Length: 443
Image 1 (cartoon, rainbow, N blue to C red):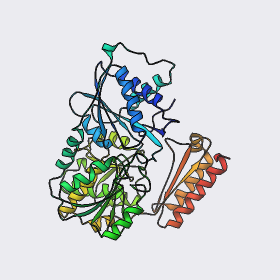
Image 2 (tube, one colour; image 1 turned 90 degrees about the horizontal axis):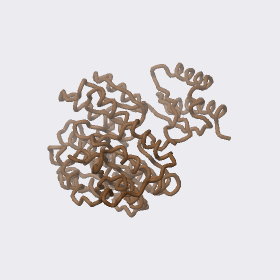
Image 3 (cartoon, rainbow, N blue to C red; image 1 turned 90 degrees about the vertical axis):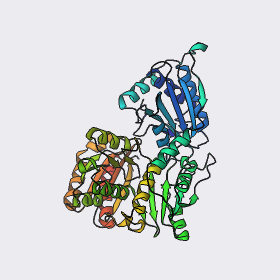
Image 4 (cartoon, rainbow, N blue to C red; image 1 turned 135 degrees about the horizontal axis):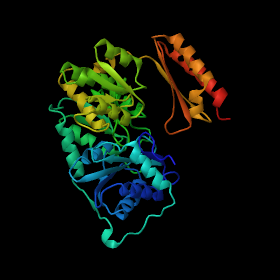
């Protein structure tokens, strides 16, 4: 029974993710903890979050642990607070950038990092078993309480991450009607910026609805109307950030990562002069890093893999094109608000101007196509598919890149190509997709 994907458990509430499943997951996780441990629980504003919170609380308290509710808080805020003394585990109830009909569970250890695969497998094994959750004696039942100051401690952490005022900056922040709504505008304003908010009125069912980092057109239009300096877009749980400049150009995670790497390298603070990114990073990013002498480590897609590599190599910076950026000195997971503050600090210190961010490196046109298949593992190993990929790679040479991978959560093959022109990239993606459809397509 595969519950955990690359970013926790996620699925449609009431169908895949039920309150019964949530209680079993939390009870199983509680069985792995020392007796009477403290567990913190946070959530994004989804309507289903409260029901899942009650179920998860029940599982942990039946396992004999004390639960502390943080309320609505960004995922990186919960991860930061798991580092506090006495906290054994943190559970975030969120489906990130997914629609309101979905929800999910992310579990963080006392080190602020997502729990390792081995512990996820142990939880999955117990959840899949036929064992019932026993009703404990009253004296062995855990307690639950609210933490009304948790958000304040996270906000103080964010504000302390930069030592410059943001006064004079006119910003637009899109909170995706998600967890950033309670934090991002306030932090920016308290640091001195003038802030216009969109997507900042969560009602439980509008999270990510035509706003946020996966729907940037609203932010782009607002930037044009207000002629602001920079726009910031978060996703539902605020662990990522994308930017839009005053010309409406999108500044993705690759550009953000490049700007931060260049800044740290210039100050001699980029450990081993190396940055970590994933297989999805644009070829233009790699060429820029090579040009300035910065080494690049490449991982699978997922900020957990980026963090693992950062820790393994004792590095300081990594991230994803999607906007998950990890500044290791300050965070143990992607933190969209922290990422935005780091870029704004560079702008205020005149390391780079807001309108030149998009020009850090030229992007190679990138085309991505998802192909539904009957068996993604067989498709990945298929000789005919491999031949088509090899033929395309020979055609591109050093002026492009191809990536064909299996989705971690769906029966899909993801086909991506970068080339000097959009037409060339599109043609290559279609040729590989055609072979996949012919041999493994779902009829």
